[in-house]
Length: 450
Image (cartoon, rainbow, N blue to C red):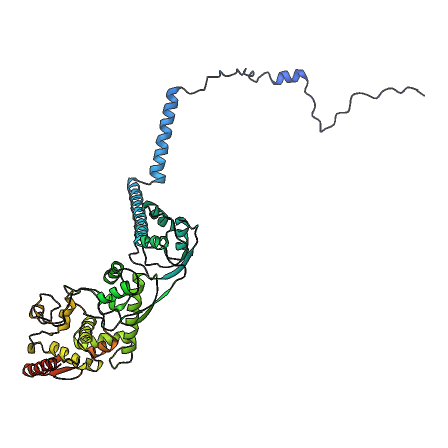
């Protein structure tokens, strides 16, 4: 037995799946007819780099393509570009108008806040201490709704040099007050304990008498502020709104509407507050008198309007007539009869040449009225002289009560055209001028006997 077997045959049997290696001689013969392989040479680094002229041409072409894209694909045409420009212009103009509108509104709003041109009279009680600054006051006023712009208030105070030291205390202010009035209020020394003033305005007082009473008897407001409120302030009442196209020569706009009564005011009440309370009282009295009257209408205002239409007079005409009745009648019992005299003269102007002949209207314009009127007084050239100028005077000559106003609407049915007052205050009435002359003699005789 062979102790060392022979090594296996190193050649392996060729299987069918393994391709046979082609002998060298056959490979050479197979490739004899093929073309010899070309030798590849490395390209020069600058062989394909474009020149400067080529770059410029390529950029020009690119820009042309881009322009054609925007014109054809993005813009469409020259017409579309024009439309787009027009739309942009319209948007710009509208934007400017809107911005201008907002700016105008803001300027008007600030002006109204500074000067209190058209603001409601809402009163507010505000307390400040010793260390309150003008800047803090502006914030407080804004918080309470007295003003709208604290920053503008502070700027205004600085520009006006009104940033003076404020005085601690409790104050009543109104949203109808302008910046100067507000600053002056908190800078003025007042008692920390507010007092209530009881004011009595007698029946038939004129505006001049009311102002003098308020200022000099009760120490309220000032003549200048009260006159300004009476003549100019836009009070929110229907009868004030009707005071347009006033007659030439009218002395006071609100004469006739400051209702005579007893009022309670704080000692620091503003002129607007004082007058507003009188006007509110007037409106209340009109409502009480006419809401249940027999005239047609759903409320007292409609009934008053219908009564005026029946009489062919305005409501202000009625108040003027009532003010004359108030001054001519000494006793309430004669209101209706004196009203009939004036109403008869208005209805039938030919009887007295349209003259109402009221001496009370002459007294109204005299600065220092005498006890008896002279011929010179009777001939004074004034639209209030109803002995010289026909019709009603340009304004009321007193502030009448509801009783005089009621009888101005509802006069006693008489045929009287004349009256003369006796020394007792009662009057003698007449239908004819001859009878009136006799009554004048009777009244004069009573004067002589006394």
